[in-house]
Amino acid sequence: MGLFKQKQKSCLGIDIGTSSIKVVQLKHNEERYKLETYGELQTYGYLEKLNDPVQTKSLKILESQVVEMIRRIIRESEASAKQTIMSIPVFSSFISVIDLPPMSEKELPRALIFEAKRHIPIALSEVRIDWKIISKEKTTSSKPYKHSVLSFLQSSSKKDLFKFRVLLVAVPKEVITKYLRIAKTLGLKLLALELESFSYIRSLIGNDQSTSCILDFGARSTSFSIADKGFIQMSHSLDIAGTELTKTLSHGAGVDFRRAEMYKRERGLDKKEMSEGREIRDILLTLIDQVILEMKRIIDSYQNKTKRKITKLVLSGGSSNLIGLEEYLKKELKIDVMVGNPWARVSYLPVLEPALKEIASKFAVAIGLAMREI
Image (cartoon, rainbow, N blue to C red; front, side, top):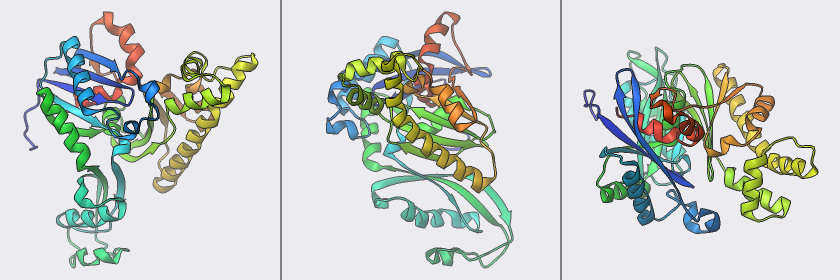
């Protein structure tokens, strides 16, 4: 936790997703990361458990099942690292970017506690709070803060005053405790828990300082984030995801869930001359257009506020492979759209390239997690 902490030789990134668990072990090799091993295990039966209440919880499946699945992946992939970083989904956390009035750095922690009460909908005693300074601009202005509750924090001196933009994150303590128990049961040292957004920005964006957005289109959850100058500036969880697309297609086309899933994977947004092909596309677009509408709102809000133009959209997550999605988003959003490659800064055996390319969209979080501590 200090400035001079020793980097790990190898680290295990564990992404406990809603439809599968992914594990990646990396080590740092000169200027690049080196893949040592990886593995994935589907959460069998999740298609039949769509109405199971446990599916709405942060881990989606029972802790005992999570432990056994991770243990199996570690065994079969022959992962050897004992240090791990695990992911926390965006929907299990609260995240806000806050612009603060002129104040000294000493006053910042106290001010953020008051701000947290305004932005977090549950008692602060039930969450763990952390923050990161995104920008820090020196100023001589001491304009009174618009929220009187913080007026006493305003410094009487105009020296050493800064305008801060801060990323505030809060995670329920109950969620943290679950992950700690899982790691302990597995005999792993949990170095950190990290929001998925931070992980996939690290693996997909890296050191790119341009203004970009990332759509992580998963099976049961979707998140949309804006990254600028290497930092998350906005992050939102969207209700529509891959499984919701399949359910809607199942009802709209009058087929069972498994057949609807097959139609979605094989046809997607493909423009077929067949009436059935057009029907599948039209049904899927009823939901995808809602996602696009929300994305446009967030993009417009950020661009109007910061006067910085978003230059590209990076796609990630298993559902980002939907046929025709990349082209449709490009047309509707009028920006460059590309499927992200989280393996771009990772070296691996050439023989693995076809397999790694096929699974790339699903492994962005696990790769980003493993990159964090090496």
